Length: 243
Ligand SMILES: C[S@@+](CC[C@H](N)C(=O)[O-])C[C@H]1O[C@@H](n2cnc3c(N)ncnc32)[C@H](O)[C@@H]1O
Image 1 (cartoon, rainbow, N blue to C red):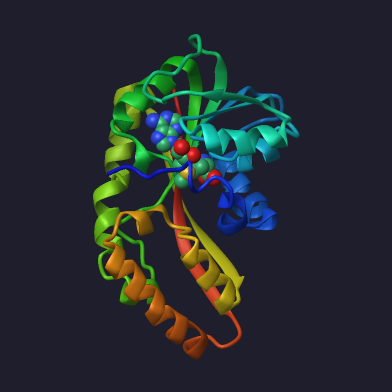
Image 2: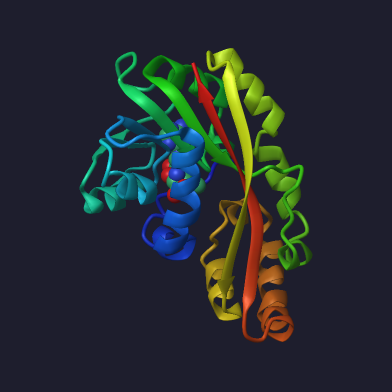
């Protein structure tokens, strides 16, 4: 089952992040692990609403590429970069059109991520990926509320060692892996709002009755256990690879 991004586009930015986190955590990870230098040509594969394409376009020419017309419609309104609609399994770019490709939280959506990485090796000299490592991912109270959430994600997110192998097979022999700690403080009401708006795409993939029961549980338990602040602590894995 795939995730329908047409319904998510309108409020994706509002529930996903804030500009400080996007800049200080995500963009910093992309630039540092991907060794992205100013003016290098960047392809943002699965760019979504262009959160990172937009930030990076201040220093680099960026093409935002995505399969969802609605997500790209939001990205286009940010307007400082080119937007291209298409499927990552068939990248419509010439060989070596880019210095670096970034792929942020996209692998779990791809039918054949190995084939996509093969396409990336054709159009780009380097690649930087950000993903969740399901071997270490913990969701705290969300696991209590939604017992099948992690199980569903373990079936979706490729394991890190397989991604490393896929990158090498695609033609990127030099691979670096870095796990980065992510901390964000919200009010319990902000976290509930994100859950009501299904900020994790996996909420669309668990049974509806489990989602509704879990939401009712959290409406009581989140404010009770975390009356004034809810600390989101997680880690994400960045991989940088070079031909
Ligand atoms: C979780 S969102 C990540 C968006 C953005 N990278 C971010 O982190 O904000 C996943 C994105 O991948 C896109 N996507 C899924 N399958 C794709 C494919 N085969 N080719 C291109 N984009 C795809 C979706 O449309 C969606 O915008």
